[in-house]
Amino acid sequence: MKTTDKYTITICGFLLVFFLIELLCLVNIYSENLLHNIIFAQLLMFSLTACTVIVCTVAPMFHRVQSETQNISKITKIVLLSDFNTPTDDFSLINRTSALIKKGGAADMSMESDSSVKGYAVVNRVENEWYVERISEERTVALKRAGEQYIYKLKMGMCYRLNLNDILYVEKERLLVT
Image 1 (cartoon, rainbow, N blue to C red):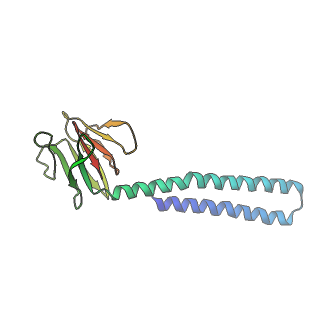
Image 2: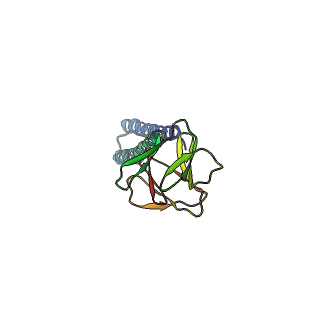
Image 3: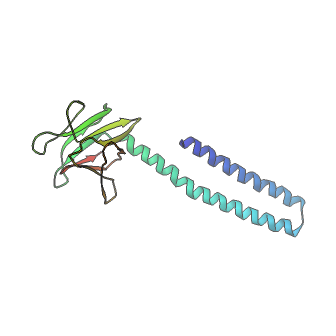
């Protein structure tokens, strides 16, 4: 579901709740029955609770969608890290739609767009989002999400979305997504 659709649904929900409150206020003005006042008070509390629940559950969801979109669109390069977490080389993803991750010589990582060269994984851009896919059956490729402690081994033929500060593990090499 698109973000604009979610906003529309949320706004319609708020308008419906406020319409019901307004309708109950009008009924209350013309009625002096104690039972009607109690029902009005209960419906008012229910409406306020429903609004609070909607705001507390929907607002963080919109923030998460926007922040993930911003993180994805800012990915510009992949950095090869040394054993001491210092960058040793970087590979620009600007103006690319795809790049092949392969191992050259002794611990020398390189990225190429040539599909005839065998590699470990391929990084693809689809609608401003970057994905990684393992293409080598005999080599290990893994992914560690930013802010998480677990390293996930990538399965063959499955695409995994990349975010800023994710780390790709290609055999013993580490590649930081920046």
